[in-house]
Image (cartoon, rainbow, N blue to C red; front, side):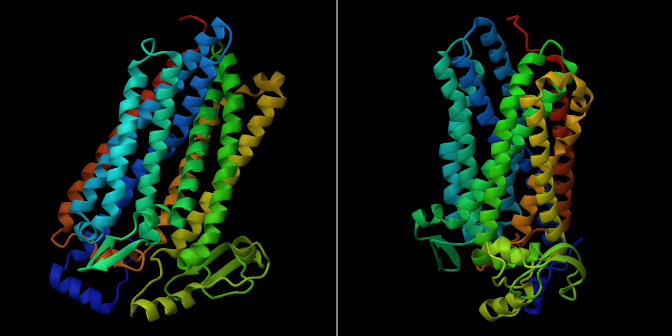
Amino acid sequence: MPRFLLSAETLNVTKFLMGSDFMDALILSRLQFAITTLYHFLFVPVTLGLSIFVALLETWYIFSGSYEERIKLKKLVKFFGTIFLINFAMGVVTGIVQEFHFGMNWSEYARFMGDIFGAPLALEALTAFFIESTFIGLWIFGWDKLSEKLHCLCIWLVAFGSNLSAFWILVANSFMQHPVGYAIEDGRAVMTDFIELVTNPYVLGEYSHALFAGITTGGFLVIVVSAWKIATDEDSREMFIRTMRRAVLYTLLGTLGVMGSGHMHAQYLATANPMKLASFEALWETENPAPFAVVADINQEARRNDSEILIPKMFSFMVHNSFSGEVKGINDLQREAVEKYGSGYYIPNDVRGMFWSFRAMVGTGGLLLLIVLVTGFLFIFQQSKIREHACCLKFMPLLLPLPFIANSAGWYIAEAGRQPWIVVGLQKTAVAVSPNLSAGEVWITLIGFTAIYLFLAALAVLAAVMFIRRTKITEEE
């Protein structure tokens, strides 16, 4: 269990006010929010990316030519649409719980941030969720009742609503990472400029990265499913080969986009949150030029790396697009934080975890790009040899966890790098937890949510697998 280090003054006050199990409640509340968010975030990127792909498939269908092809394409749209619906349902179920955390586990955060955090959440419900829920119903029950173009418009609006939902959530999250457009009144943060909140530069980096990650995840899911169907379903092989070629291009766009947006956002962190940037590189001392640590034995207690393998000047190049340029180290940033905010420990609690999570994210992203390129070469330039690689295609489902690993590692870096703040510079995580919360109460809900989510996730995967195995794409109506 990681240690959560606070100033002595803060620790004494909280122990006096809230009892000896306060720190346990804090740690458990953080763990509970992390687990429920991780479950939810398994489904969100698929929703973002697969909704767009299904909309593209239906657009292909309504503009297709022959009667036989239209029958197959319609089945293909319904096939991937059903997978999308299973995922969408899980995303909604796991997302609803998130809102209850703010009032039950994090009431001090809700009191302090409610005026600002509530606005984008309300807009997410009033705009994005209403669009999603309305038009997904029309799309499900509107086959053969709506005109083809109107029905296609429905799934495009579902895709728009899903991605608009992500935008509003990331507006709220970006304020927590980089507060703008606010004032402190009577001990609470209040909004002074809604436009500044929405145009927060942090939003651009987070949202573009999330959008392209969704495209990558949704596209890779289509690649994996298509590969398995090509290898095992003779009747459906032709249509899934054609789908595969489109999915490869779609996923390639997402993979390159997520790499480019991530790179630009990391450069932005050099000014917006240099402590986070230095932490996921375990750069303890300010360097010019700064090396990139390939691997490191991180000693957070001593605030140094006991051993490391470095690429000279590479980190400066990543941050400044030049092999020279200063990158501030953790120790100097800690001293600056003490001067600005007073005594305390302002280094993220898990530098080691951030360091390796960043490498897991980048490594799986690079592996995904390689797989997509090889698959694209096979299906675009070597179609005659596809049957020779049927054995490899059968094992493609084993690679499906890759984008989910990258997404989860990226989420961990984003949130762990904000610590010890829940709202950077304004409120610490340790004082945001509900004051009357006991460790026992959190344990009950933590165990309950985890068990229920495991059951639901297993049920969703089983339903999706059974549907994929049984469904064929043929000319029969």
